Length: 620
Image (cartoon, rainbow, N blue to C red):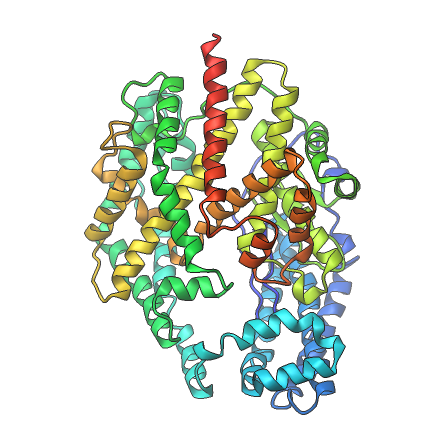
């Protein structure tokens, strides 16, 4: 997960934490991140926050005067950039301070103060985009020709100016901004109902344990080794969601209508085109992903048949997709995990490897889980003048090693982008963010297979990679397929009930999982799964995980083959940060995500992994 502040001329955003439990017995100070690299004391944070408040007032003097002269224009953009950079550090410290102990009142206070500062930053800089648009292409180009110091803003200025035809007049934009506060009802209702108010059912497992099947329990027990328990959990969990099908249908339909309305207001032909245009992504990228995935479902079906064989199941069902394919009592302490990761990235060259090796000794990471520490894993590279930080919950298994490599892929992306780009163009969008992490995962698998001492080890690594491809590529592509269809219907003015949404999702779910072909049986009740996916309230977002793993697989394969220029082409993407449009950046490096090639590379990789698993199983 790449946790980052969206840094541009006028916007900032942050994700919020969930929670973790259990402490690691061998944790030392060296296993904790060093937030003092950002601020030595809370008083230093307070002082920097006061400096930001002064800058906010200074920026207001630019409002209405951005185009007075080229000197004024540059001074105002420089001030805004420095203000955003300062806020990025303040916010990073505040939320990471809170994430390391979510029950600490000082951390909660810093987080709240950071939120308030963020709102002030948004408000203070809101005039910049409309004033740049009012100045127009010719004047902006003349400013850039006259002042070389404006070159660092070239991409951001182009991005604003190209949106001119989708921007309303001042009054229109004010109306949209006003309604913005009143149009998040669907997402808010979904969040409250699904997390706080669902009357979760209880089930009695084969062990005699009675369990309340809420979202976290579902995630845990859906992988239960006992098949009857898995079915019991699935039937109870999805049965409860099915009871609320009408309500979730109304909620999601309201979200779809909102997205459609905004697309029309901003003069886009449909919701998908508007969403993709945020990063100037061609429609062909999305459509090619879905069409290539549909055409290669036999590869996914082969995986499910192999899963059935490995699990010893004759009639594979949807509740059989989560138990691990292969298990083994293999332990990888953090020191060994770091060593394995560093060895695996040697194909990226000495400069990359040495920089990563040095960074792993400098307390960029918070390694182990503790009571009240945030769960999961993320990388935050927003503290531009400091260094990236990584939050982990490492527990000495292979999944932890894989997560370590994934998050350090993000960290090195931010490290290289921050090193080679000015602040304003260092941050990168999701479309390229996950490429760095998935590329490193491919390198790790390649290395682990080379050093594996037994077939059991090889099966563990291959099984983990295979499940990652199912979950990160095929599942996200399936979500993308569903999103495209339901948004298109609402864009055309059609209505959608919860029942209709379940029918659409159910047909896609069965198609992807080979229900008609007899590969896997999907019960109709499970088609309510669409209501459970929170990402659908962030339109056309998840497809980027699938495109990233496709690009990452292709880049890694080319580098491992030693193809001339492949490594430099890849590293240039990381160094470029957000200085160019992401699709064009990746295409320049040799991977066209609007063409079938990168998706074919994913399918080839998946089939190769299955070939290796089948070859190992045939020996025993």
